Image (cartoon, rainbow over all chains, first blue to last red; front, side, top):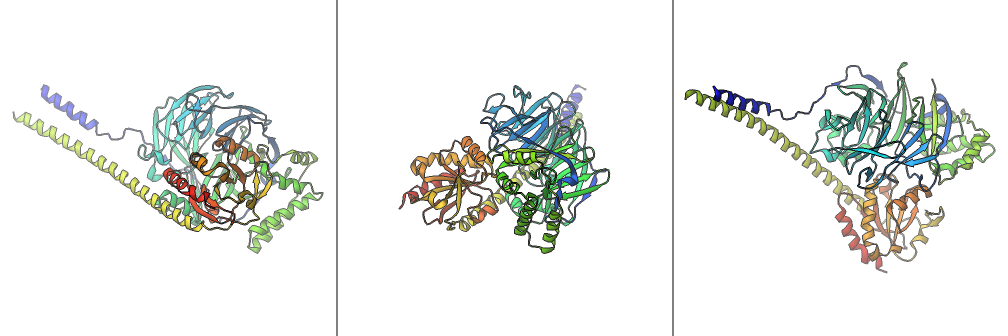
Length: 425
Length: 202
């Protein structure tokens, strides 16, 4: 009898040890996804600020030796502050107040606790009021208070592209990076704040495209979920602690990257994609009534606004600021903490050109002429060119004396200027 | 006795199933490694082909003698004045390029800067303002002359943000074009050690 029990136990041990992968995998629910169609993509498409926004304000980020910015790689507006990630050039995270006054830096370069080699991504833990910095080299998330004081850090096993906090004490990690290939075959990992894995998803074979740079794969806008846009994809997902929902699918028609294209080696993939006729998503923000996303097509970046209730989509790749003082920022925009404004970045190195125009007494005509000259240089198709010119000539650019003074006060060596645009209701 | 034999057979049967399962997953793992190796090989091959192609396409490029560079004081200066009589090693970096790549390359060049001569090395970047140039110089601890120019006229500038290096003499024709690669730093070391004498040739 004893032998029987012993043998049964040994057998049971063998059977139970046959579970090769005990990490929880999760089903992706795509039954209620919204399909958005952009089958025909115009090479050039204008949007005027007045069509989408009802007011504009400028925030000049203070320029001092400590606050100097090389390039804004990511911006978060929270708690009346602007958190700016300059990943590559300054390798720093800088904090400014809502008037642009420099407050402090967060963390510093180094290998010790609370230090990073390079800040690769930032996010706000809205539940604990902390700012978190991801350092890929040391594979850790470092937490600080908003004044930049070091609190604690979480060491991980993976290299990440991006991360986001959601629910209480949950972190979604997006890997999709070559270095993980032998260690982890899935690109999304949801962990708790102590680092314990809750589930994994997106098998590498099912995740489109090789790894790529960039942020905003995970962007959190509701306290209940994070939102994920995988690299080189046309799909947007919501990440919960127990499920994944596909929310949107953008149908680019003939411009959708075909499945077999993804099997190309990384370098070949990116080179051929650059010269291809394919479009892919690059950035997104999911507001309650509005989905905002960017896509890349023929090396040009497009901005899209999808009004959910009306199922209406508008897109462009040329922004014209006809509301206030002409300055128009980058196509990549960031949401404000109030969720009814978008923030874009104006690089001051271009200010000389604008000053030249606005110093002219007939600046309205001068602006129109300079836009048309620009289009003439880049557009050869006569019908398209005439259409754009007509659109420009029908635009009235609004400048107040204050706007003109502001433009004249900008120096080409100043830090970038934030353009805060309030979305029309 | 018969019963014991039966249990032994049963036990061996289970071991067999377990080993078969384990074997399957090992084969799967080996296949994954193999696929990754194939992918890596394909990548390296493509990289090699592209590098060779670019090396040919970007060598012997005549730079416009009236091309203006902007120095860190925002002043314009003609490229022919910057080059002067002596050959220069020109490092071309892009603002949009990979930060670690240019950082790594600058570190490697610095190891040879004494033999090459600091005054014989110049950096021409696409950092579009004095502010950006200042950050770039400060962060990389650069003591070479640094200039801004949007387009030098090399074919590669239209399709890649990679750092490249070449020798430029007073005839303003690019020589010894070299496309740097973060993954193969030893190639850079070989390049710099082999061009030292070329830079000092008159």
